[in-house]
Image (cartoon, rainbow, N blue to C red; front, side, top):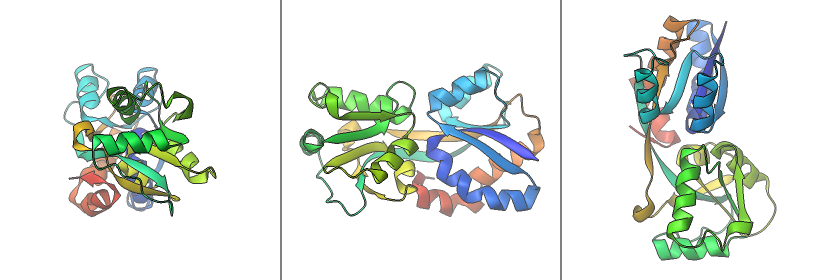
Length: 231
């Protein structure tokens, strides 16, 4: 049996790590679609098959009120912060304060980040560039991707010098070939709580609830913490 899920890219590493255990326990194979939260929400509203939905807690609350998520089925996975990344082995730029971050971004020859219209981190990062008053200066170096995972994968595979990336730290941590430099300076901090819930259209709601429990329960706390979730 396949269990379709729609998930924010921030939870891809967690879901992947628990997939085999869930299959052994339930006999169900997770069929995941991962991407920017806005895109995943649009897929759900368009009627795409979905038993479990993983989005920001605010979005899950909204979808519950609108009847697209079963009331009482949601559970928080943890808080995820947004950070800066470079390719593994590259020198770590100084991002300790707004001025240092500004200088490091201006020095970059390529800036990898998620969709500035649909992805939580992408929307936020574009606003950070505007607040630093460098959005026009770095415009030709911006390299947006559909989601943070894709942005980090492309950063890892790149060969050009002086590249930098920004997305949620869970996506940085599970991408081989990139290294977490650190969190955005406190002035630009973004911390997002993610939740998992059962979709109202779920074909297998009981199995879906078991997945939500596995993702959010005590048994996965250490795994979530290691992957960048703050419990």
